[in-house]
Image (cartoon, rainbow, N blue to C red):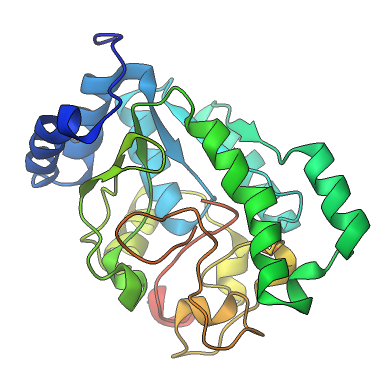
Length: 267
Ligand code: SF4
């Protein structure tokens, strides 16, 4: 473990961001290694069990078998996602830190607006994401100096400027995106090469996998995030988890993936 002084502001982290970015030039594993070395158990990986998160889980546990990995269980995930969670735990002999929404907040929301408020209005959808994802994320990151995400530039135009390492002002923490520069092919080639467990929904046309009621399969050639909140028009396909610098979104049950259909990816 490194020093126990928590980094709380951007200036204090500027040197760290610079050093970590330089480490990231050596590839995702080099960046993950530098994060573990610098922050010890004050760095945590946000996993939605997506393809990128599975890559990072495999890499991170090879570096530090006791690494912290958390999942935001919204209560509305696909059974296939829970199955993958169990398979991953078995494969690596690890345990996730699982964050649930505040029970009282969910009760009030569902009692007042019904179980499917997300279909009724954008405001309802955003409230649901706030209660089930954003608030628990804050708890997941309490006490963390750094967190790791599976964001990639190729996932969407809005993520086209994703840096390897940035300052997350909302959570007063360093945010690392080790796969920012990776292509869809690199993700799937890595998963295949290492036999990493993946969500079976990817083989059924689900490219970006979030909560069950808010995710559908996409047609070949459709953008991955077309399957998210598909009934909304003209809104960013984001849920509020990633708010700094770029439009919002995902570690929800937001299992990202590339833009192409599974049949294309698996070639
Ligand atoms: S993705 Fe859908 S079910 Fe999940 S938290 Fe957001 S609105 Fe609610």
